[in-house]
Length: 209
Image 1 (cartoon, one colour):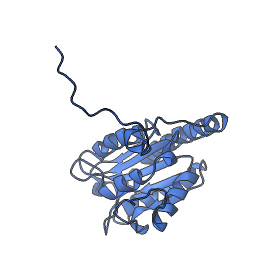
Image 2 (spheres, rainbow, N blue to C red; image 1 turned 45 degrees about the horizontal axis):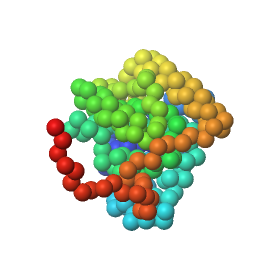
Image 3 (cartoon, one colour; image 1 turned 90 degrees about the horizontal axis):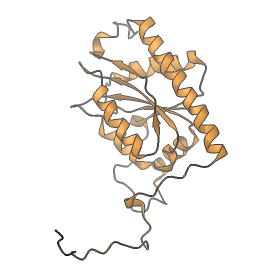
Image 4 (cartoon, helix red, strand yellow; image 1 turned 30 degrees about the vertical axis):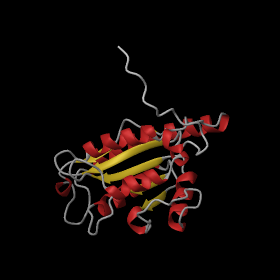
């Protein structure tokens, strides 16, 4: 499973949550984990003109996504949305996401990052991924950790994390078996059509009543 830390700012609160989250994953004993920290990847912020020949950092990220059978996305919420580096990283892939499950851990103010998560669900549907129902959200996140960086309500938050991970593991196993039995075929979107594909007639059609 790839655990993707989506916030890329300096001094981010997400480091504390990522540390807690990785420990919860280890405690579950359900996954081998690859921590994909977007701040450390040094991705180029311009999409390559030829996707078939991606820059080295992009190719390395795509290889890690391809290896994963499940994804756990940790995201903050900024201005009712998720951070730009996370969207850019998601958009670099396509087949890497197909028929794989995605779970979310979010943090923020009053909303706990849930508005960011709801937007991400729409994005992953377009990428033929399956988002699991349960997640973990930290509302008023600075109040949820003590001075030593430990989660205050260990029992409740830990139980929510373990429930989410159990769902994620179920979907990861089911979808892995399904992909092995029959490869997943995604419909080709408009922006992925081959250059020589027939183009629609752009002549103005007569008005109809």
